Image (cartoon, rainbow, N blue to C red):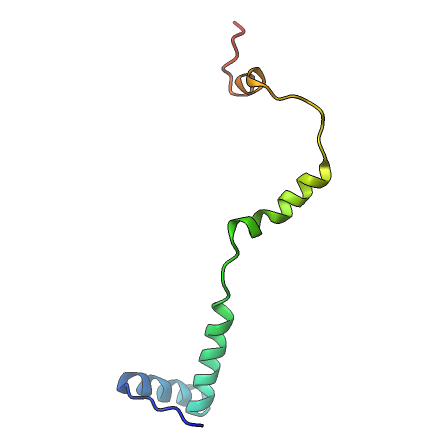
Amino acid sequence: MGLSIKNEAVETLARDLARRHGTGVTEIIRLALVEKAERDVPEKTLWEKLAPIHEELRKAGKTGLVADRAFYDDLNGESERP
């Protein structure tokens, strides 16, 4: 199986890296592709990132307490109390 590099800059870079690492061009290209593939894992969606938190909240269950507007106003220091 063959691969033809038709870009002089890419070929030079591959040969230089191979020489510096004491390996062949094929091996240095393989290593570069493996490293890129490992970094190129798709990022998790926001939902996937939040799923563990959502699961913990689900396990906690409901408290039965009611949080109304007065509750939030009091938290923000906006209560109607003098």
